[in-house]
Length: 359
Image: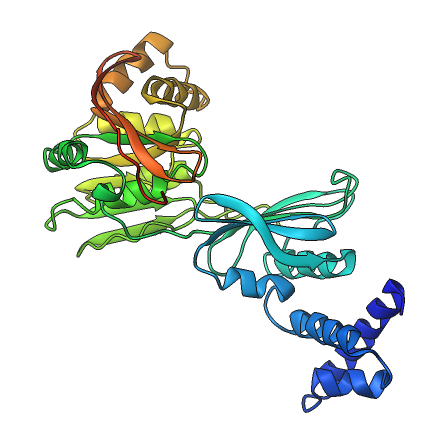
């Protein structure tokens, strides 16, 4: 049986099962093709069941709590990231299966993806971020990348030795404004969750996130989540909108999941007007780079603040930058704790030496 014949059979059996609620996919295949070889029949049944449930053939992968990324690079093997290591998932998808998967991803969020609009971002019901790219931009077929929020509930000791963890804990207790920096997949959010977990139980915490990932074990947490525009282009609520709103909600601590846009200026201004003990993360290669990136993002707000004034504001706003890195083996550790002592200037107060989580 050729590939085209298998696809046609899957389509036919899928329609049969949808038309008859009592019809089992295996029985439907036998009814349509009684002489089909057992391995081929099993493959057809698998593909039909995949169409009937969730995100189809990758549902089993998404059920694994250790998988943080799912990468589909067109027809062929599916790749995953588990515990910081990229590997093949042991699943091979054909073009037809990927097309159906893309339909299931974009339909519920009211988006479209086609030759005129070949790239789309969305969010799955569990909050996972998904990106889809289709031809002609995707040269080898539809690409699907799913970023799952596998947030492990860990303490600071999982990232740093006792002395470094104690230093960070003292800074949190003293109400220091702390920025966690690191690269993609370095463990910034997990570390932020651990740091925020040290906040005194009497404090009122307002969290602001693009997609709700933080899981704070704290008695008084108010969570805010950004919202993208609808398919009509209305209803968007940005991180900047939520940061501004959080300032009106009587926060003791504001926790911003990640600073990545023009909300940087509002956050810096808030930290300079009496809002102490705020926590956030930022993509950067090191503590000094974190300050430079914060400058750039604040400048993108278009408010026209002079760079020299902005640098002075940032220096006054931030107390510590905690940089986290992912090692070659997938382990994540605090590599440096830096005190902000002036405009674009830091002093390293602690250096991480031991392996961290995931090692």
